Amino acid sequence: MKDLSSTLFMFYSQLFLRDVHRRTEVYRCSSTARAEQTTRLSSDTSLHISTQQQLIPTDTVVMNHSRAHNLSWFLNQRQSLHPVQKPQPAPAQQPAPAQQPAPAPNTEMDKPWRQIKWSEDFKKPLLKELKDFQPGTEVSEIKILLHGPIGAGKSSFVNSINTVLRGKNSASALADSSTGQSQSFTLKFKTHRLKKDGPGKFYPFVFTDIMGLEEEKSKGVQIKDIKKILKGHVKDGYSFNPLKPIEKGDLSYITNPSLKDKVHCLVSVLPGDRISFISDGVIQKMRDVREKARDLGIPQVVIMPMVDRTCPLVKENLSKIYTSKKIKEKMEECSNKLGVPMNCIFPVQNYHEQITNDLHMDLLVLMAITNIVTFANDYIEDQVYNSSEDKKE
Ligand SMILES: Nc1nc2c(ncn2[C@@H]2O[C@H](COP(=O)(O)OP(=O)(O)OP(=O)(O)O)[C@@H](O)[C@H]2O)c(=O)[nH]1
Ligand SMILES: [Mg+2]
Image 1 (spheres, protein in one colour):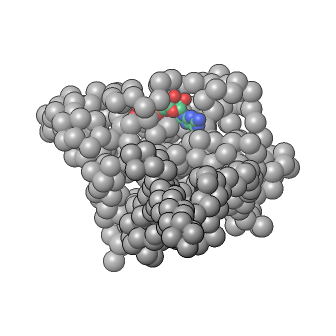
Image 2 (cartoon, helix red, strand yellow):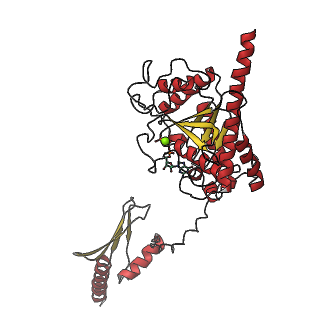
Image 3 (cartoon, rainbow, N blue to C red):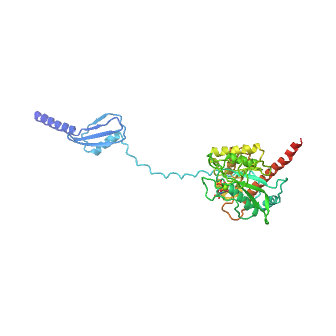
């Protein structure tokens, strides 16, 4: 009986151990981020479950579970040992906080840095002064020369002066309607007389409009030609030849010019919207001309057209011209590039599409001409009276 009971015990023990062996579950994992678990459900059946991105410190864990009946139980156990980082649902995408627009840079100054009264009362005396102006010497016509890069607005400035003085739309100097042109539209050395009220009456100051300056030596007006114009050697109507400057013997060459043939004020025209893009070559040519004018004692002024294209604030309201930081910055750029003081720089908006007069445009142009005419007249008086004083000594 004892044998029988011990035989039965041995038999059930074997059965139990086999069962345990069959249900042994081996959990293997690598020390890398990738863990692999294998549940041996039977000797030849295996189930692989891979979980990614899980760091488990041990290499192999073997667990025996006589009651590891199912995979879920095993997984529960495993998770309690090495809790599986369940992939967290991606946090709901928070709508990106609405981008606060960067505060607009303050483009306007609190106070105008140059005083203008934007009223008819301010305009009337300026206009009267020009209408009544008479040169203080025997030089009956004050000559003002405009020079600058092509398409800078030289011809349009002459038209603007005419429009302001006549009080109505006028176009004596042909301006090119296509901007960004690569060749100067004005080819002749042309003097523009400004008509006064009444037949055959003209203002005693004239503007000469010349071909635009270009970087290439063989293009645009030659510096030598401009220097000859300053000294009064070139007759009105001369056609520029970009390949060959005017020479003695030319039909348009004045051999012994007098004060009346000379230029009495040099006006450099630089477009506000393009000043930064004007090539160094053209700026250098302008400086050369300026230096020649300085040596001859000729006064100089800079006109900066295209203010409407330079600053949106000013395009909207021209009376903001002297509170616009952009306009001041561009005027300073003109001053630095050409070496002209700020009080000789006048920003304007030319008449180019308007057909009726605008008070703001008129005032800016009037301020510019009044200064130009005054400087030129002072130069002539100085040449007449001081040189005659010199002769006496
Ligand atoms: N918006 C704007 N356009 C202007 C202004 N002044 C001139 N323009 C335009 O700019 C272009 C060139 O002007 P022009 O007066 O022909 O220039 P220019 O200096 O005589 O040019 P060249 O004779 O070719 O050397 C034309 O289309 C004008 O209508 C201005 O103040 N504002
Ligand atoms: Mg022109």
